[in-house]
Length: 152
Image (tube, rainbow, N blue to C red; front, top):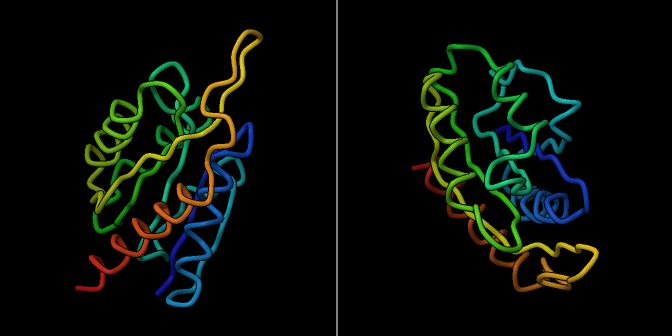
């Protein structure tokens, strides 16, 4: 089975989660890991596509939104899993936005999950040290659950 993991990451949080997902699935599938900016819109060769983003202004990051817009209007038969990293709020809204965009194009979303990520402002550091080992273990567990659901 071929799995694509696409992600956008600015601070490295979402990349850490993407790499954890890849690590969890590599023994079970042929896994490709790619930044969304480098991704082809032709995803038809993959049985499962993970798409990850940090939460920006209570939604997906701009490169992920642009990628979703570029995708074919007909994604019938493609299966996705969605994940995001966040430090304060917006995870559910971000994942729901992505799911709706994909569903409107005919894709099926098999699962979605969110993981804390650190975020630093000039004044404060939120969720310092996240994602940590426990967060990455959770991401691996969710990835394996979604992968298993596809095989049933």
